[in-house]
Length: 371
View 1 (tube, rainbow, N blue to C red):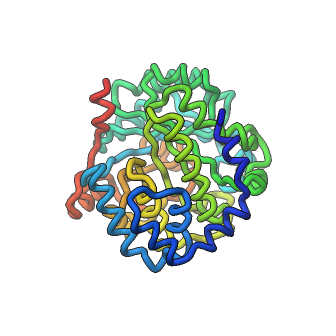
View 2: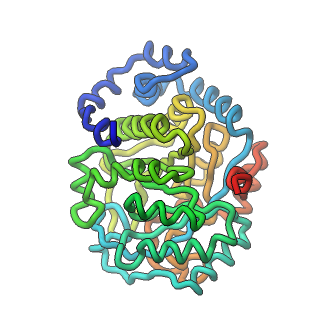
């Protein structure tokens, strides 16, 4: 297969959904008893039938995570550079049709934000923008990376999908990780939620991780926005995508995130809801399916949920996050992309992690060793 689109087109959404919901307790028990789990096993682990086995799944997930990652939690923080965006997305506060004041940080403003973030103790930063090619383009990203590279051990980016040549240009500037969420793998619903802008091109977005793999990016982040479509089916396609990428671009590392639809200015009610128990089931299912993948939980989730998930398979947490450009120092009251739920400080989160016998890690040691 030349790219994931070719794999994706061999699967039918409704048929896949029926297959997941048809899994029985016997299928779940078979998946739990094996050491090497397949995509069919993953279907069983995310099925309604697996709900009764959650305690067993959590126990295995904890053991597998400690075996591979130890008892550490990576700490990271987002830095929103711009809320300018040319896309209309029904679920996002930065959507083009949301009439708000737009802002893109200047060099001086970026360094003001960096100063606050560094005081928090962070060495791992995630750069985030809206998708506006006229303003936040490759040359802007080069300038930002060059500016902040001396201050951080690990730089991740969550911006618009770029061409292969663009990613090849950015990696020498210190770009380590790129996150690109498909939002939903349901192609018809994807069109409904992205009616205007470059993001409306489903295939271009779907093939972005292939371009990242060819560019030799160190780590890729995948995920869907939970609430747009049936979470079990979307999660299966995420697992399918991960499985394909790991086999084809085995040199890269991979991470998964679990963003649930949160309120924003303009609002979108979730098509489907996912309970906390179901999110725990999904996190454990991914860990049982893949021992190597990093699993991240953001401040979208509540304090109590984040407290309880630390031991069950998560490897990375954000804390003290601001989802607006200038939110840390320059312009705290500018428009947020979405409302956060956990507003506790990084120090508080670090204390909670330590209280559970885990170590909060502020620096990406693998990256420092690679340098």
